[in-house]
Image (cartoon, rainbow, N blue to C red; front, side, top):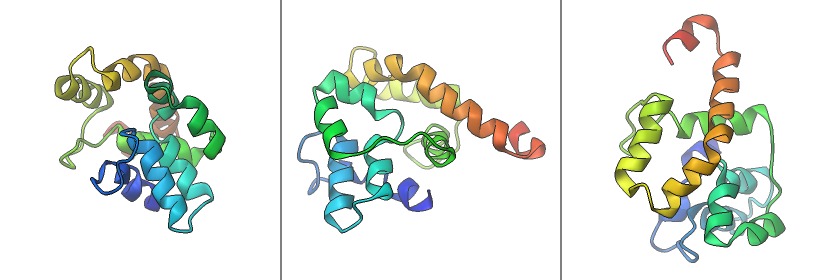
Length: 140
């Protein structure tokens, strides 16, 4: 989970951005580094990436190259991504969603994907919060 959290946006790196869809580019890079298993899949699917993959026309490619995972680890990865801004600052789920719309605008592919993925993202977030100790969950 920690490695996936560190690497989840690696596909944005200029030298790695082949398709322009960073989860796929990042998952491929992780796989090409010899980490073809779970880590590559977590990077490729992070934050409900299937919704954006569908909008961008990469869903079949994503599914053919990487196995999706539904697990506590996946939920926690999505939670971390949706609780942290691009500058590393802690954000609430709602603040993070608002940040995405503010950066991309409502008509952009990323924002449209967030619209479609909202219940998936919120579900991962909610399940992770429910797994946290009460005193920790109160601060989220």
